[in-house]
Length: 193
Image (spheres, rainbow, N blue to C red):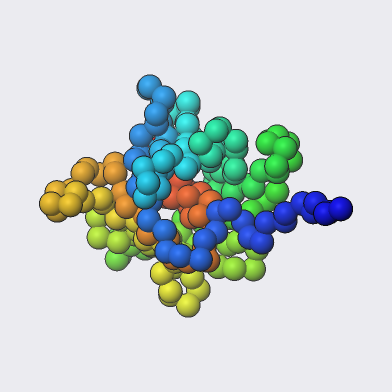
């Protein structure tokens, strides 16, 4: 008789071995709320954020299509600077079972007008760096390698679709849910959510 063994996933469903492209619409699908909706290359919704509070809320939740909370992001004040903690939610989907996942600290160099945020994920360090224009930014690792880049989306004819529609390029072997959480933090910094 054949034995049936449960299949153990070899990697997270949020990590792929290929470069991924997402479209981010910095609007909620729910009327009169702040948030964002993320589509994959097939046009399917893969992530969403519904912020029923005011823009720049102190707590937002990254969810999958079905509404399962993947992470919670909470703002905190650090003297004159602002920071955010990201918590990964357990599979039971209860907010009480959150584990600290990442921390983001905002830095602003007055003379240069640059905005950068230091991201700490365990022992790994990343930076969120603003590019030309308010909406465009990159996530780079400690070596300066780009692991994700968001920029205004353009139609096939080259027309920009607006400040609230972005193209997000995510490099292979990068956790998409982490990048999406960092997109949310950047949206909170720019008061888009």
